[in-house]
Amino acid sequence: MNAAITARAHTNIALVKYWGKADTDLIIPQTGSLSLTLDQFYTDTTVVFDSSLAADEVSVNGDRLTAQQATKVHNFLDLVRQQASRTSFARVRSVNHVPTAAGLASSASAFAALAGAASRAAGLTLDRTALSRLARRGSGSATRSIFGGFVEWHAGHDDLSSYGVPLQEDVDWPIAVIALVLDPKRKKVSSRQGMQNSVSTSPFYPAWKQIVADDLAAIKPAILARDFTTVGETLESNAMRMHALTLSAWPPYSYFNGDTLAAMQTVKSLRDSGVACYYTLDAGPNLKIFCQAADVTPIQERLAQQFGQANVIVAHPGPGIQFLD
Ligand code: 2P0
Image 1 (cartoon, rainbow, N blue to C red):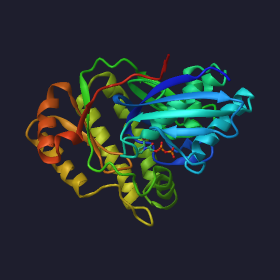
Image 2 (tube, rainbow, N blue to C red):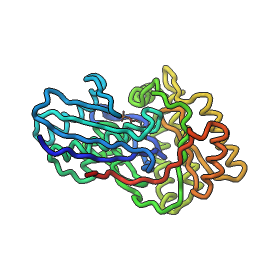
Image 3 (tube, helix red, strand yellow):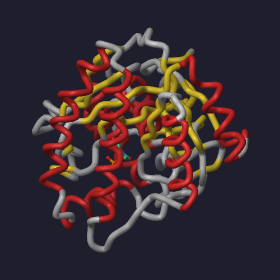
Image 4 (spheres, rainbow, N blue to C red):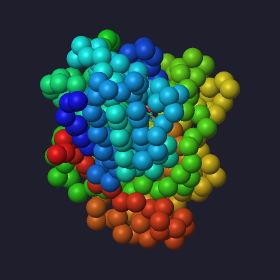
């Protein structure tokens, strides 16, 4: 038996979204994307390769997954075994400090932590670019969670050229992201299924590719210049245009629920009253509100009053992958 390795990876919120693959096997995206890694939501994963095992054993939050539930993890471990020229099975223990499948991108932190722990447990020494490429094979958004702060995923065109690059890892800009949990249940249409449906059936998809290119060009200098308004307007319009790809697909689908629309109105009315804040949301109904640290309290109070204190979680920029002893 080899040493057990534990890695911690934080989740990220995309400010310019990834919504569609050019290669579904290698997970090469149709466009680039850009995210902020968050400090509040993370996954700790421990991996040990053990030649006495007859199959991979995977547990998440203390519950053993069935072989079928663990298919993605098993396939991912096969990739690691292939890279490391190993054959033994692995025991994987993962603890999510993320509301699973609540649209808070738990697959990002999960596959980034798994990439780190599994590769090191298998004896591989990968730099962060190689780790990012490996994490990508588990889940697209995990590509970005190897790094802290603001991270761009270069779409690339093949396995070697598609990886995350930090734009700014140590963020000293006093900003916050307030997560508003409106429904913690697992989503009905997975991101994987939803995005491919948009690529193949939404007539707006060609426009989306241009929108992402323009938004990346606008948001990167705005982040570096701490231009809060440009960053906020870009991320909110990018999120709404991504969601237009769900409504315009056939069959149409949506990740919004009634509370999502009410929360959007609340953010707009806060903004109208002079509190600068902008929302984004992923493949689920929950809003993430981008704001300046000085404005957290009034936003938090207003959201808590409307949706309950327990559903409002304040996050800040978080770090990249860490290995724990
Ligand atoms: C993102 N999302 O950029 C976008 C925005 C959700 C909305 O990446 O199929 O779990 O595993 O590559 O990464 C969620 O999709 O999809 C996602 P796969 P993933 O964060």
